[in-house]
Image 1 (cartoon, rainbow, N blue to C red):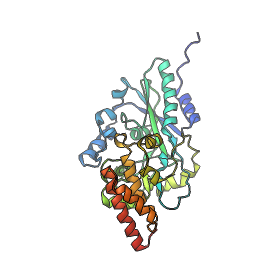
Image 2: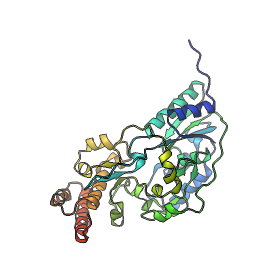
Image 3: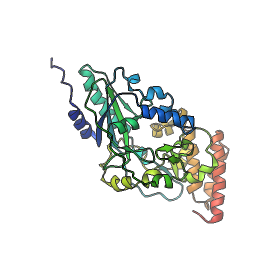
Image 4: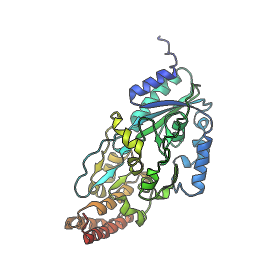
Length: 352
C-alpha cells in the first residue's frame, strides 16, 4: 500500500487553489469573530437585517469557527473571480441578472476547497469547507485573512482586483501561519453610498437590507411600490454599488475569465418566467436563493421587470398582463396589476 501523502504546506495549498481558479488565498486565526458578531447584533437591533436569516440567524454560531469545527485553529480563505463581461440588452421586455449570478461560481470554488480539506483530513486533522454557508461570516474571514478590505458598500475589495468575487473558506484544526488584514483602500470615496438607487448604504459599511434591492428581490411578500420602478429590469441581485466603485471599475477588466458552471447569463426572458412551470423554473434557477424554494417570488420580479421595460404601445403586452392579473397566485396578480398601471404611465409620458 502507498503511504498517505504528507500534509501540504500553506504555500502548496495556496498554489493549488490558485491553479484551480482562485485569485487570492489567505489565512486567518480561528478565534471568535468578535467584530462581526458585534456588527450582526447591531444591525439586527436596528432592524437593518430585516427578515434576513443567513448568518444573522445565529450570530453566536456564525462568528465562532469552533462551533462548526471543534478545536479550529486556522481559517483558509479564498476569493474566486466572477464573470464581468456584458451582453447587449435585448429590446423590449427584459430581466437582468447580477454579475455574480450569471454563472455558478460557488460550485467550482466549493469543489476546490473541499479537495484541500480532504487532503488535510487524510493527515488526521479536522477540516471542512464552507462556501455561501450560514455557518460562518465569510466576508469577515476574508478580511482577517488579508484577502481584501471592507468597502463602503460592505463588499470585500481585493487589491488589484476589486469586488467582483465570491468567497469561501476552510475551517481546520491545523495551525497555519496567518496573514494580516490589508489597509483600507477607499480613502474619502463615497461613490457607492451616493449612487445607491434606494439609499440603502446608510453609513460606511452599513447596509439597511430593507432598502437594498439585492435583498428586496429575494425577500418574500409584496414589494413596496416605492421600490418597483427603481428596480427597473433587475430580477436577481443588484450591481449598482460595484459599478460605480472606482477600484472595481478600473480593475475588473484585468480579472481572469471566471471558471464557473454555466448559468442563465446576464439577460433572461421575463415572460418565460412569468408563465413558466414551477419545475422548469427550479431546474433553471434553482441555484439561486428562492425563499421556500418557491418560484412565485421570481415570477413577481419578472412581472415588475415587464412593467418597467416592455413596449407600452404593444397591445399584446397588456393582454398577457391581463391574464396574469387573474392568476391564482395573489402575489403574481397584484404585481401584474401594478405592471399594467406602470405601462399606462410610461405610455402617457412617451417613455419606452
